[in-house]
Amino acid sequence: MPSSNQPPPLPKSSPRGLLLKIGIAILALPVVVALILFRIYGTDTHHASRSSSWWPERGRKLIPPTATDITLRRDLLDHYATYTVSEKDIRAFLDKRFGPGMALSEGSPVTPAAIGKAVGSLGWLVTEDTVIYSYTASNGGVHDYYHDTKTGLTYQSSACW
Image 1 (cartoon, rainbow, N blue to C red):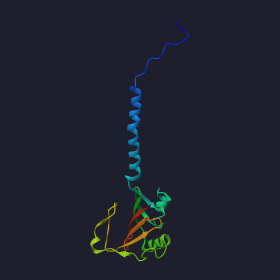
Image 2: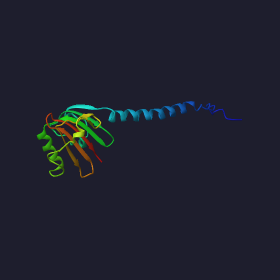
Image 3: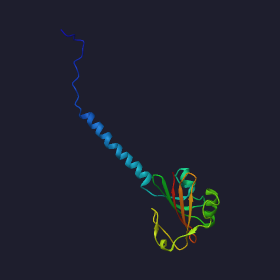
Image 4: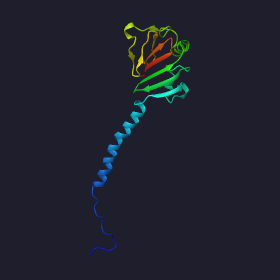
C-alpha cells in the first residue's frame, strides 16, 4: 500500500497561461522598440541655445556656441539643425572647429538653380544670399553648413561615422 504521508499529485496546468505570457512578451518588444525609435528619430526638438540642447556632446559641438533658435533632428548617423548665427561667428566657429584651410573660409555661393529650393530634411529654403561651407572631418564625416549671410539663418547637415 502506498504511504499516506505523500500529498496528492498536483493537476497538470494547461499551457495556455505560459503561451499567453510568451505572446505578450513577443508583442511588447516591438512596441517598446518602436516607441524608443520614435522618440529618437521621429521628432524635431527646439532649443533656445546650444547649451539647452539634450544632444550628446558629439552633436552639440558641431553647432556654433552663439547659435540661437535651434531646431534639431537626429537620424541613425546624421544630425540636422537649423539655427540663427552671425556671419562672423559661424566663420570663426568653423575655422576653430575644423581648422583654417579645411574648406573655403569665405563659403561657396550656391548655384542659381538651387535658389528657392528646399535643402535637407528640415525644408530649409536656399536664398540668393546663401553660402555653403563644406567640411570633411578626419573620421570621414561630412558637414555642410548652408548660411544666409543677410538673415543669419543656417541649415546644417552633419553625417557622422
